[in-house]
Amino acid sequence: MDLSRYGPWAFIAGGSEGVGASFARKLAAHGVNIVIAARKPDPIHALAAELRSAFGVEVRELPLNFCAVGMLEQVKAATQDIEIGMLICNAGAENSLSPFLERKPGRAEMMIALNVTAPTQLSYLFGAGMRERGRGGIIIVGSNSCHAGAPRQVVYSAAKAYQFNFAEGLWVELKPHNVHVLGLILGLTNTPNLARSGFRPDAAAGLVMSEPDDVAQQGLDHLGREPIHCIGGWTERWQQLRGLPRDEAMAMIGQGVRSKS
Ligand SMILES: NC(=O)c1ccc[n+]([C@@H]2O[C@H](COP(=O)([O-])OP(=O)(O)OC[C@H]3O[C@@H](n4cnc5c(N)ncnc54)[C@H](OP(=O)(O)O)[C@@H]3O)[C@@H](O)[C@H]2O)c1
Image (cartoon, rainbow, N blue to C red; front, side):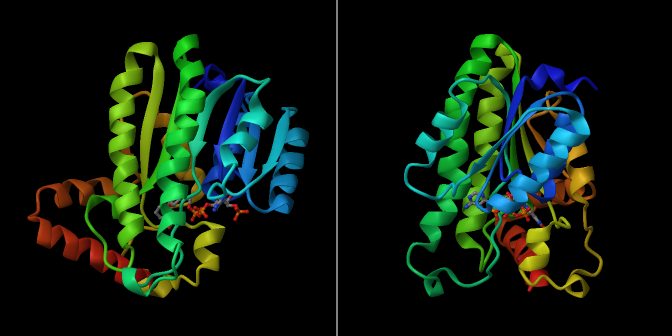
């Protein structure tokens, strides 16, 4: 697969580790230059050094918080002189499971900023250039929690549902312009963040655990082919959920959430 059509630069929101870093390595291997955006500077810097040395590409390091006021201005300033041919919105996990009303004030707004506002603004910012050039790619990394309301992840599952419809609608609009859009729907994935969240692997017996490299590869393979791709064995579960009465779908998603705790 020739990924250079998605160059000369890719912007990866949440590109310093896990699935985002896997995307960065795969694109850099095809000569695509990378902007890595995430909060902690050290992991960004380490990956940037690795990509420069292994693949000879240019890398821009952009430490920022996608939930912070002024985020978009930082992104614009860092990218105004380069052509972004690929946008990957990866940052967006929910690490704490708790009822909506028991959360700290502002927590819901942060989840919405990360999963709804940032991907929307970044797609608007970079999508216009892609449409004008008649080529490009946008991947929004979502979650199986999008398929039904999830207890103890109420805002997360709602925000992920937004991403699902956002990717589908944008896919229809940008397809005639040769710009590929994909909602990449993940199930349990073995990321550093999942490990830090205190996830107990024994609680997920029987569930499929995906690896970041495989997830990123599937994303790149399915980009341009369809608007939504669910990772691995989860596609069947999604189809099953769509056919269920809503109360049963919610119970099924709720079961998945319980297995994480
Ligand atoms: N892991 C799973 O089991 C799983 C399951 C379903 C869906 N997903 C989805 O997959 C995506 C990746 O998940 P993940 O587990 O790797 O954790 P994640 O925290 O969403 O993503 C990790 C990357 O995002 C950055 N990041 C996180 N919050 C940020 C913020 N506020 N501002 C800027 N950068 C931020 C991290 O670096 P810093 O920490 O340095 O900022 C890191 O580069 C998410 O969208 C998640 O919803 C994951």
